Length: 401
Image (cartoon, rainbow, N blue to C red; front, side, top):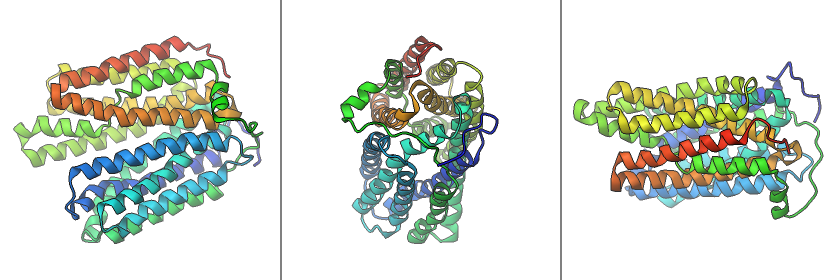
């Protein structure tokens, strides 16, 4: 705990350490996530298990985010909790290699995502505490950019390692310890925690009531947007289905994977651009623009002929709006709530997003199956547009809590 924040040096050792930790940690668990379906296939399990593993893990992670945010605001130092969270994620991910049945993978993934949930609001609070309010956008944009670079390098590493280890999964999962333990070390030794005064030890409900009204209105907008914000693996499915009649299943799948890499490249690039804009323009307007781009993407799926070129554009729009959404939600959250309540605020925001992630893909997938893509993505477009309008109404003069 030391060194005052400097507006002229937003890229300090704490911001850099957190950014690099996000890169290495995401690199690690993206390797595991990429090969997990193939690993489960060796156990001859149904697709149901993949959904169950993801759903249980995401649900547990959302609960952990809320609990961590509430608990760590009461502590004089948050950083040790972040170190433990990163270590639990590292060990849980590597333990996939010990699994001999699908329920073993479920337990390992849930354990890893529990650590991920615990560390998320703490990491964001540490990041916000390391910079001035005038540079929140760049700091959070940099962290999102680094995290997404991990999401690009991770799958590429997975394909490389599958060849190196000749599909020997235990060895491959063991290798994930290397980048994940680097992430633990970065949080432990590179990050400096600023001095802060812990909040009084009051009840969870009272802590929620202390969050300012503009932040609660913000959560409503985030929640409505999130209820339509489906997982972009559905875009991969869409591209594969639409291109298969023209190119065949194998080539269509290759196009879809290539589009997703393009999606992540634009995500990584625009995360920092969005943060830079957020420090110079009203944050609510930049966030509303991101939400509006999501609506444009969904409407493009409905009304445009889905060719290679239009699908490529849809994936690019998807990467750009997610970059704006994630960067601006975090930086706007930090601005709306006073620093002593940052843990609770980030935990609440992450939980709302987690519930949205869980529900949106199920709803959009069900609507797609029963009624087709027009109804499914029309549902998303309506919620995206509603979220954008609500964010605009928040106004630039929202109180800071």
